[in-house]
Image (cartoon, rainbow, N blue to C red):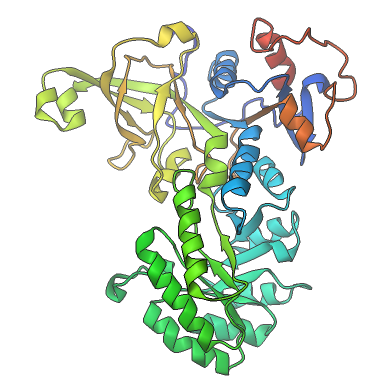
Length: 459
């Protein structure tokens, strides 16, 4: 496999731009533009592995790692949200992944809104949506931030504040800006993470003082993780609604919703609404992973390999005496695998350039990052066939907290014709102006002519 591609000249995670679907020079027949981003459009949506394999093969990975982004996955996530949680408005956090195409897909329909935590993110969000579709939440809320927020011609949807002083400051600058009070549902006030909000007892004490001062507390923001928090959330909503003459009209349940927990979360939210006895309560949440993760796949390259006792890798005595391998890849937890620091679990699979060559017995393995320190293990334990320097690794569901807009990092965007037509609100027989050129007989482009199509799109 190493004869097909050679990554040996890639040093410790160094990155350079690749020719990508994002850049100029793409043939119009297979290119469409959305928010100044070019994406390849196929008659049928290809498998992500096929696109990743073509990119890796034709670039020989000489320039490092890259992402592949399936735009149709974003619409699929929004459809799933509409089916299961239509009564809960999502506010997507830009800190999760501010990729321009992702943000365009999320905001072009009014299903999804935006959450920001910095002035730069606020300016970016205002270029996409109106202030009424933006919430602002920063754990380091400064007077400068408050002055900017409260000076906007129209108020934001809401400003989430973590303490009484911030609430007073915000109200003094603009008494009409709706505020949400961030409250921790933890029963142990001694072990509360301040990032989760103020303790329940403190919230109950400060709300009457804020109300007497004319501060417009219109709702609360919590982190709803499971059934244990439901009763505390219900009791808190009921109590605070009796303390505030404004009433509590908004409940933010945080960012803990993912595809696995969606059905259970919907049930928990229904329980809260039914028992809190607060009429016209609006629900919102700040899901990032749910919308971003599955759309992006990261491809990295093996740049080092060393044999090691399998028992050392697995930390199991019974595996001792058998061969295992430690592979060094050309990314690290200080680069694209920084999502590991956010609690993300990542998993790799081999990406052979020729599919039939990827088979072989599974061997105990570990993946070491390019920083080569004791913290830089993107995946401490994996079972992989024997791989060589120059081979590729594919990391799926890498859209959350791994893609940063300020990185000069190639992203290959693609989708299928049906999805593109839905984006444009019409069914088309041809892709775009000049689309009649090179029309196919209707067979999938993932067959023999895939190589030709690939070059017309990405080169």
